[in-house]
Length: 343
Image 1 (cartoon, rainbow, N blue to C red):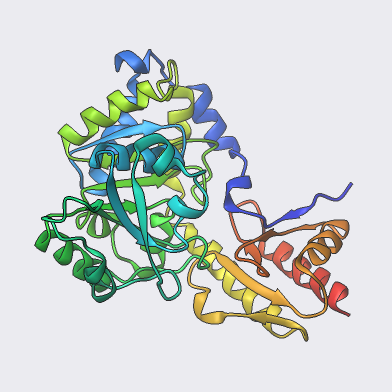
Image 2 (image 1 turned 30 degrees about the vertical axis):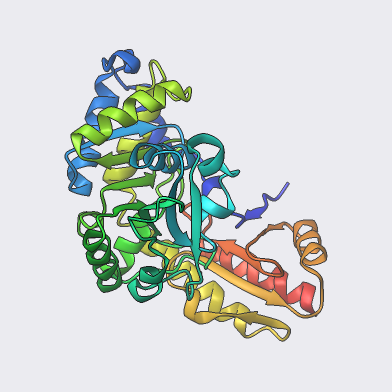
């Protein structure tokens, strides 16, 4: 049976033979006791790569974001973020449920908001009857906007604003590797403007599980404590950390291939009558498009029946995400399937 072309997300990748070999050969210990040498090596390497004092391996990007926000804030505080940020749209109300904090939403353009937009939202420090503004959160690349990149100059301006008002900065860098691969700017250059960063190993980098939280040593010490409290402490987890280490050392540069596949997919889809692609948002490995002839549900159903798996983004928008487990030839086949449906 011919396999499906799966473009729902870059989380669907499976470990390569080389990655599985690294996992099989991993030296392990009890990570809750900090005795797993493979985890320790991964955390040290990731901290150096991100230009931070320390790092901690956590099970997921959501945990990485939410632990970071928990440590950076106190109940009743407020975090400023973009209106379609992952921490608002896709993390199950965790800021309120787990940390007792609220989010102040900025109406960004293609996922990007400016210091000029943020400053009026910062609450006066003397206003004891208001939530206390504590953190500015940035997502780079921006998932729901279509994998868009937040420009470094804009990040610098947000950081300067944060320092002016004694605010902390958190980066949801789930796909920061994609931003770096596209722009050529090292991840450490992006990360240096933030007090904390969470970044995924299980998306474009191809590891089966895991994320990294990085920041100052005192911050990571508290992250370690909260990880345990939230059930994220794992034991002989070096088997998984080995996959993350392999991903960091071997799969960052190849992200450019995924970007090229996304460009080709977007250009080809845009030529099909009844398909509209916002080409300005196609900056990394995500392609968002709309169809005129069908509802999203009907189009996804017809695609699935023809062997093409797609996802959704905003209401009325279809999402295709390129990754290492889909070839350029399969991208061409995906276009043919869409052409068939639209005909």
